[in-house]
Length: 232
Image 1: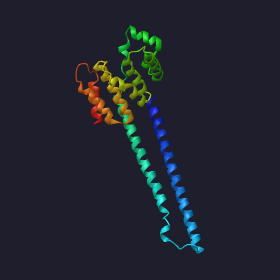
Image 2: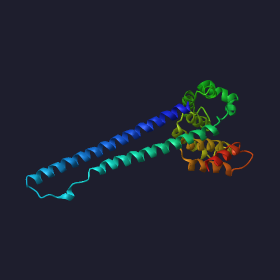
Image 3: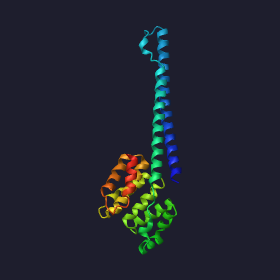
């Protein structure tokens, strides 16, 4: 699912760049046409003896074409760079992502929550769209503990919705009411959200916070270390 979404995002970005190029070319062509018309009027007026010839007034016609070519090349390089960065982020994400087990909600209370919202079943089946919708309802009605927002963030990640994942996970990393182990889980998945966005610096910042709490209550220490090493 995430590869299809990533491909759609890349195609959308390609379309946007093509539109920018076309608009830039149109503006330059219009400017060149205007200059040519002004040159033609100038030549007519000189021919009729109404104004003296001004050689420096004529602008070389090649510069707009050069400007267009340079713009196209620069945009092409920028698009290639974004494609490479996006592909690299997708590969790193796929290599390090692992869905968080729902074992933490498998007790009686968790079963009750699932019977009302059905998010656990959807999440375990990989139906992350349905899981995110159910989790949103569950959390907004305060029928779920705030920590379940980690699962919502993960569901967003697997749909390629990195921005929504960041908005969901950041508050959990800053919630002093959560155990440090749970904040570290949120930080790890937040780092993966930043990887999806192509922001290695922010991802490393979260991973460093995970690694700083090296203790027995840090289940994602080794995973964070491996991801940190790859991003360095």
